[in-house]
Length: 187
Image (cartoon, rainbow, N blue to C red; front, side):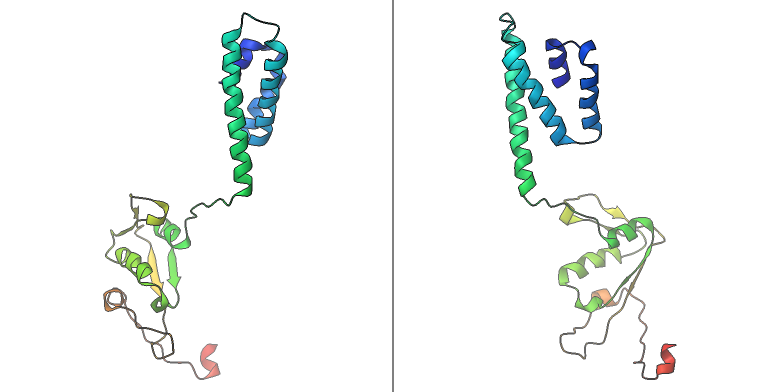
């Protein structure tokens, strides 16, 4: 490791503050600062310390290898700064399934076939589960007993609306609400 190599080249006692800075950068995940400090030590070790010590060729080789790795890490960091980084973020539905919360899905009949297929697995019974394939999971998220799923939809009479497939629709308790025409009904 860097610290072992450092101690083989420099005095630990005289550099205790510097080693503390290295550890702080690691703990606080300040990777650029850490890399900058390590590269500075590498250059100093190669250019000053090890030139005077001809019998330390094996140590110079270790520093050269570390220098190569540090340079590669620096290049990778530069690439990630300019590149888009994607990460899976667990959604509201998955969190509700885990925590036993209630969730309302509005206009469920407009959902894609893939989405409805995923929901059907959740509606199979009290022991049903959800697998987050987009995240690459193979283990299911088990449904909390308190989890409840409510869904709303408008009749398929409007343009662009469609009926909910019977296999999904049968898993819900259906309530039909007449169109509200009187303003007093809204209060």
